[in-house]
Image (spheres, helix red, strand yellow):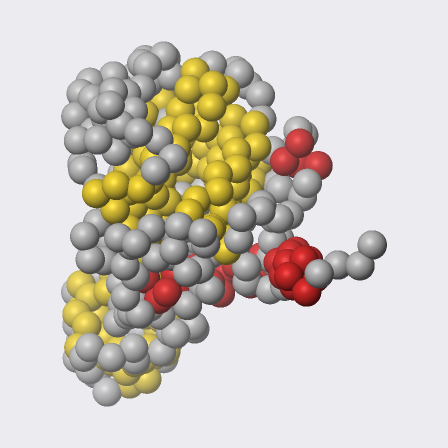
Length: 358
């Protein structure tokens, strides 16, 4: 039976989505890149790149954790983002929430007709909890009047991988500016306290964002269990109404995408301007989202061909607002002025870092 022109077009679109590049609007969805380190206990960016882990109440360790079996492993995934509930938190203001911000221009130029209820994006991911219960997530838009779309992950069985797929329509209230600011937030949340949830929240529909009604109410089972774990991998957001196979990108491709938001510099050249200061110019390895903030995690070793000085805590001053930065590093003693120098950090976790995170 011959295909109609419309059917043939849809088939061509689906084939392109399977094999075409850059269909996944999520960066590092396979959890390959962890430039800051593989483990953190702080709220924010600290383990897997591009995933902000929001924590309030109790304590949580979030890690890039390797897996060696299971359905995601069989599909080519080797790492997950894991949240471990090291100290329980079931209070009204407590939070366990990993999410990713997506630039507004990424959504605006994606091909999604987001103002139309007949145009779709599809979110898919693998999830596993050590505790059986129902979990939720939500999308949040930021331009214009903020909108939100909550969804259920379903009632997960303990220690069992589940593939979650959500097809999400556009809405006439959605706005995404063509700029590098925050456009969309994708949240996959093991717990929100009742300050942020509402029994009357309606899933699978767009509505004005309300901080006190992000999702329906959670049970406290997972949040109240010491050392409960929550694993996520294979996160993909793509234009269209069908979840196609995950776009596996190489480590180098994912690293370059992550470096738009965060880079680390193990060494650089400079000029000793005084006995206490070194100046250097630095151009990022990849063009960053915006002019980055620069900081040092020290200690830093400076060799000016006459001295080899190590300073445990380096004062960093950044001049200029462009992508190429003029950087002044201070707090040294004993350097020889007006000499070229070579600088290096003497441990992998001691770095000059550039951040342009959303």
